Image (spheres, rainbow, N blue to C red):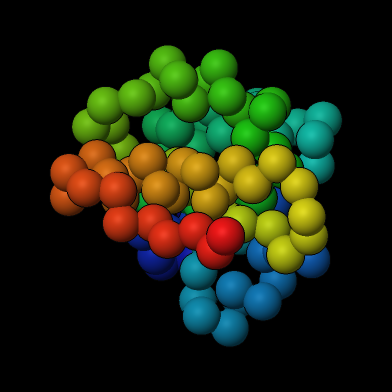
Length: 108
């Protein structure tokens, strides 16, 4: 397993490279192999796998089957570009589940 961390970043080289300086493990993937690599990582020793939010539609079914207290936890990284905002929605759900209250503020 690359690195000596419990956290892995799954995404394009452009996304993962900045995390190298933090010592986090990197898995460079594209849309064609992200599902296969995520399935492999699901049986790894990682505790958290952050992934690029643009991969969420490709991983949705896989992630739905994994819901519960299973490690590693897959967490989307919000994109800086406009889009569907899967990561923001998922993070909102996770926070609400963790503390029982929706504390996400939206500008009107």
